[in-house]
Length: 227
Ligand code: AMP
Image 1 (cartoon, helix red, strand yellow):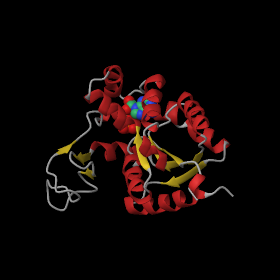
Image 2 (cartoon, protein in one colour; image 1 turned 45 degrees about the vertical axis):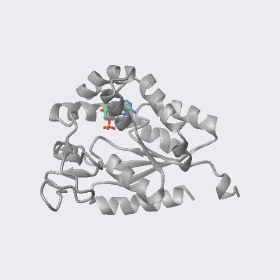
Image 3 (cartoon, protein in one colour; image 1 turned 90 degrees about the vertical axis):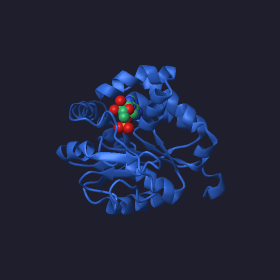
Image 4 (cartoon, protein in one colour; image 1 turned 30 degrees about the vertical axis):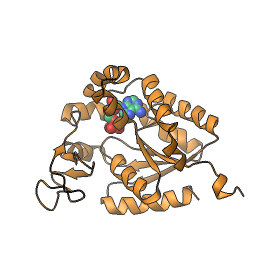
């Protein structure tokens, strides 16, 4: 057996439509397992805010709820994965979203001698996603996720986690854009479930329950997959 110290850093993928809880769960796994959450959505939003050339090209596509080009997203992910902290292992949240991206990831991991430990699909009811997304917001300071109906801070307007009082909503969390994002998911990303199933890497879980229960299920999966 390979010595643990020499094992390649684990790579986990979380698949699921917008609103399924990928970001929330990936952040929790980051804390619990010391893995790095890599959200291409977050990386792209940072590029848009910094007005980098990639950000300038991505902005209108993101506002419309479409998918940013494979070239841009793959380049952003590749750069981020080359940073030293990713040697601890990564949880990919929102990547890959197309077959081309899945193949680019395979090529990248082949270069570093890593493999995909598990691709976890969060199975949810589409209709519920629009309600979930429409009410969600995050603490501008620590990034903790909150929801108008399902998860409110104990003191109105104050983040339980860090005491922050400024919150933000994503500009693409509008009903029209959410419909486009769900369509993009079904057309281009859902086929990856079969892609990973065919390689024996897929683990599907029911992700309609409460957040803590899903975190527990995921924790058990990650523990086994990274052993
Ligand atoms: P997310 O935060 O994962 O919901 O992503 C927000 C938006 O960023 C998406 O609606 C896409 O426009 C874009 N995006 C994020 N990740 C990708 C990806 N892997 N491929 C293409 N577009 C992406």
